[in-house]
Image 1 (cartoon, one colour):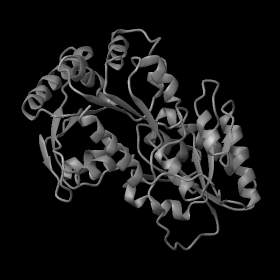
Image 2: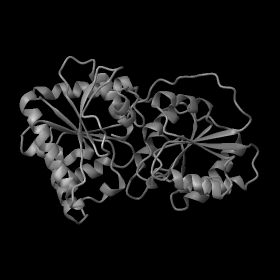
Image 3: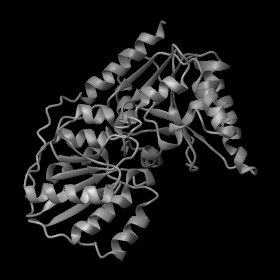
Image 4: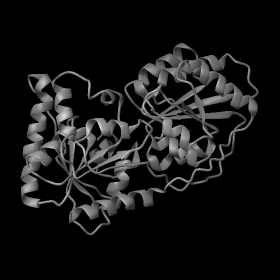
Length: 376
């Protein structure tokens, strides 16, 4: 619940990060069926119940604990959470239980033991899950067992990580599943006095699989290259690599070239898309993310990683041929050369011909599907 933490602490709905879940929650509040929300927290939020002041949404917060045997904490917490929510299920008797991928073991228990209709929401296939079928260890065995449960429906976000191939290997046969690209909001165009420079955007979680240091190494090389125009890199996002990235920028005297903004509320991101010229994504597990779709929607000149031999981002290249894709074999060199070409070429608008789905249509489609499952 990292993107919701500030909202829960202040009881004011201002979610950060990916809108995929919070857009659904916001739309659900206007639906005529009863909803019960349970958020599992692993960072010891003091509140057990949250009543938001600016949205009709009340939620229970279920805390996780660190037990004496740390390796057993996951299993003991899962059992505790299962018992707590099972009591709630007994009283509320829900038609559908909607669970995200991070709680797939809970979803499996609801499905297998309580025999409930369970919808599993998979926002993407991160690197640790890519080889789940071959991974060893008790935890991997438990995950394989969980994903083989007879879920009523599994909804994947199609974000470039080749989830169809993964689903065919790891889900039970004949499970209903869908693969949907996320939506975008209508562009909010504002008048911004443009500076005489090129503004480069990087909007991402600052973690190891997002290509953060390949980005900074490229900026270091670019700073030593003679270009037709000056440039500045704007980094929007937070994560466990942010301090290390700031130290790299300082050590390499890039302070006047790289600006960090931290996490920004999604409804304020449009300001960056309005003044940005170039957008970079170096996500090694898929490049049809929310931020990437939004950059395309604002017609920024985009640079993404190209496809892999395992078909990661194969669909990305098919859907968005106007994007500048770079080979993954030497990312720093290829990114630097691509930036040189774009900046010196003086052409920054993408003019994408792909029609992207609006968030309203995308979420309405999901709610309609959930309604259709009530009576099955």
